[in-house]
Length: 122
Image (cartoon, rainbow, N blue to C red; front, top):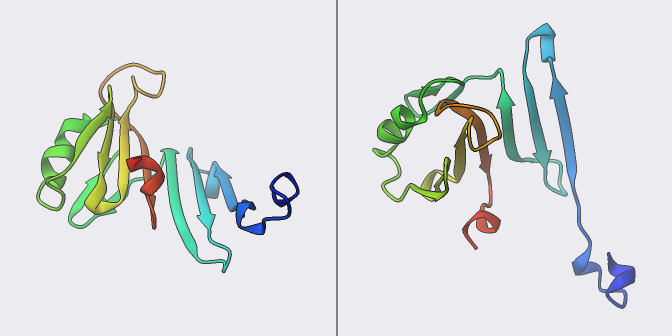
C-alpha cells in the first residue's frame, strides 16, 4: 500500500493467516491470524469447533441467547450490532446466529475473538 501513499509504509497491511478446513478429519472451518511478530492475534470460527470462554462452552447450533445470557456475567456491555450479530467488547469477541450468516435459525454460527477489536467498535 505504501506505493499508493507516497511511500508511507505505515499504510502497509501485514496479514499472516492460517486457514483450516476439516482439520484432523473433523468437519470444521476456522482461521488463525497472527501479528507481524508471529503471535496469535485473532481466532475466527465458522463451524465445527466448540469454544470455551471462562466456564462457558460455546457449541455451534445451540441457541445464541443461552450464550449471551451466560456470558453477561463477564461482559455486561454485550449488544446487538446488526440483527443476529452480537459484540461483547469486554471479552473482545463477536458471535452471530446462523440466520445472520445467511442460514436459518438462531443457533450460534460464527465466533470471532481478537487481541484488538477496535475495527468492530468504530
